[in-house]
Image 1 (cartoon, helix red, strand yellow):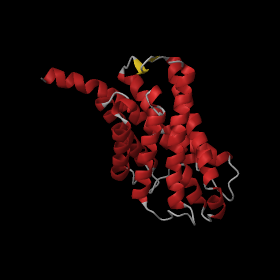
Image 2 (tube, helix red, strand yellow):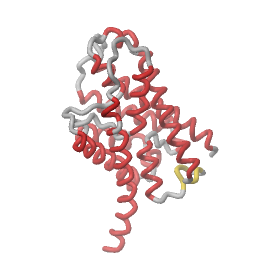
Image 3 (cartoon, rainbow, N blue to C red):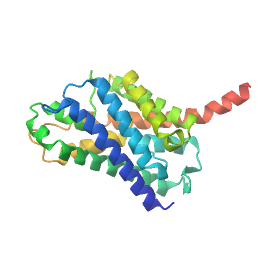
Image 4 (spheres, rainbow, N blue to C red):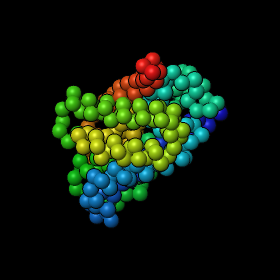
Length: 249
């Protein structure tokens, strides 16, 4: 599989992820929508379905959809990111690039779908929350720890059970993300994906959104660094655990 096809696969898959994921948040958070005030459980299931669709769309490239997953696979010692895609510097950058571009574009399309509601929403925080995550209690060390733990669970389970998101399967990955959301998503909104947060945050910053307010750049590094650290830990621990189990037996 060529790196060009890998890039397009990740762009379309991650774009579908953020279109539907940011879309469910918009439906819940923005004034006057049919789903307004639908609650956090609606958001978690919407993001799960977004992952389900994204994994199907990007199945050819292994459906990483997330730099933390790509990093986890790299540190896990995999020979291939997907069938026919060797793990090397060029392929790693291709995955990262496709994920970021897709996340940005999906958020832009979400804004187009909800344009009138963005214009009608009086609260700047509700507009930003559609695009990117923010903490319920702002405490950088603890917010970082929450993102590390949530992303560790994501990457560790994917690697131990399926090898890649597409190997684990769309439904299983979707349920895993729903589980992380309902169990660990309360403190920070569970970014668990640097591209999912940073790409839409950039879209929020550049789009002509009426009275949009700040993009909260002082917090923006937390949902990038935390998931990368969690993904790295997930990849390393998933590599070590089978060795420990085999030695113990």
